[in-house]
Length: 160
Image 1: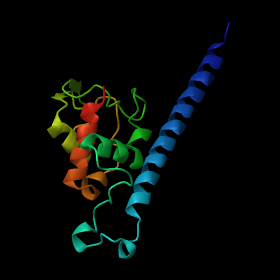
Image 2: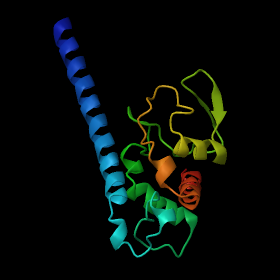
Image 3: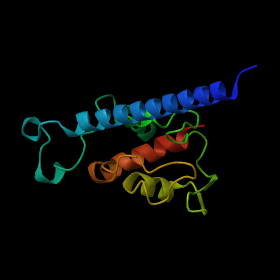
């Protein structure tokens, strides 16, 4: 039989590993965003004063749909590091949430629709999902254009 002190030690190690994993996911997410933001504006062929605070669209094929563009951006921005196909200690899944009511940290509920997703990208701390901290990068709300946010929303809507 395992002693009570051994059970506690295993629990502490498990929690520590979960925290380290969570921090690693956040670091990977921030690294993906910083690599997109840190491009040299002077060498960018699309440089203009209006674009100084926007992230360039991810590289890839954009001839198809907003879903494809949103999926590419979701990967390149590092969203996939935290928002996987299942809830994690770091972030809730986005698969199958569109149109559903979710519980918020403040005790309220909200239906996941275009407006909620838009607000969650622009102001991640405005309506936190119950059980999660406000760790999503706030820079997305400033750095992404409305078209890019719309493509991300279209992609999230497609997740089943």
